[in-house]
Amino acid sequence: MKHLRTTILALVLVLAGCASPLAQVKDDFRAARYGEAREKLVRMEPEVPTWGNEKQARYALYRGLVHGALGDRENATVWLRKAKRWSAEPGIYSEDDAVRLKLALEQLETAP
Image: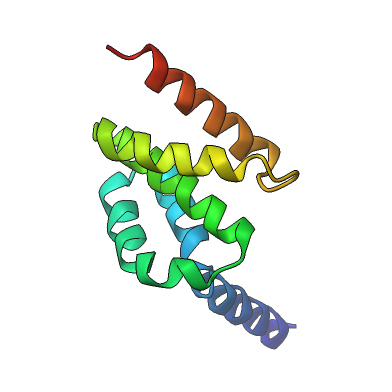
């Protein structure tokens, strides 16, 4: 029994370390580690054109959200507009991410 628990714990730790870079960015964003998230996003940027639509859309969304959270309105606008263009594709975003995009765009429109 003890061996089984140890094996399961090891597996959980390995799987936790295998989280996709975008999942790590999302976790950083949720934990308000915006600087870390931005660094990861910038490092990923060269790979983005090789990704599928859904992954590119999430990248654009979180890049915009992170820039916005850091007060970089100019870059937030650029990336959130890209994310908005992706939203025309049905089901591209989860319900939560679609709401995040909508709220972020509304905030940009109402900001002075």
